Image (tube, rainbow, N blue to C red; front, side, top):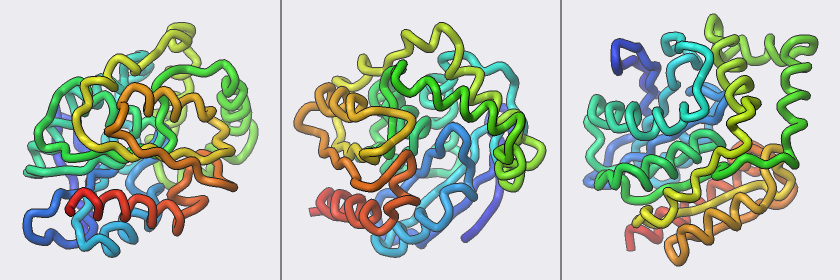
Length: 259
C-alpha cells in the first residue's frame, strides 16, 4: 500500500495505491461513502485488487480522512460537483487512462453522475454498493439517529479515529446536506440512460439507508447494461458486512468484462 497526496484546485487530497499495475488492465478507482475515507474501506480494495491482479486507487475527498478540510455547508449538488468537476481532475493528476469506478453509497451516486454526465471514455464500467438515485422518506429517521449518536453518543469518537481534525466536516457535511428540505426532490435518474458502460449494482437487503427501490430504479434506467445483486443478511456496507460474497460478485463481473 502506497500513500501520498495530490493537489486538486488548491486542495490537498489523500490518495492511496493498492495492488500492482499489470499490462493494460483498467485501474479500480474507489469512491467512498458520505462518512468514509481511505482507511474506512478497510482491506476490501486490497483483497479485490489481489484477487483480480489489478491496481487500485483510493482517495479521500476534501473534508475527509487526511485530506484538506472543505467549505461548509455543502450544497445539495455536492455529489454533482465531485463527479463532474473533481473526479476528472483526480484521474488526470494520477494519469489513469482506463478505470472501473467502484463507489459506496455517496461514492456510488458520484460514479453514476460521472458516467452519465461526462461520457468519460476512460471509464470502462461502474460498480455501485448501496448507491442512491433519489431521496426516500422511509429512511429519513437514520439521519436523526446519526445526529443523536454524534452529539451524545460515541459516533464522533469513532469517526475521529479516521478523520481527525476533519471529523466535523465529514459528519456535518454529510448530515446537513442530506437533511436539507431541497434534498426531498434530489434525483439522479436523468443520468442513467446516458451511461453506456456495463454496471454492477449491489445493495444489502437490510440496508438502513435505502430500500430496494433504489436498485429497481437504477436497473430500469440502465436497462440491459446493468446486473444487480441484493445481498442477504447485509446492511449498508456489503463490502464489509458480506465481504467474501461481495468480493466474489465484483470479481466475476470484472473478469467477465475481460472476456
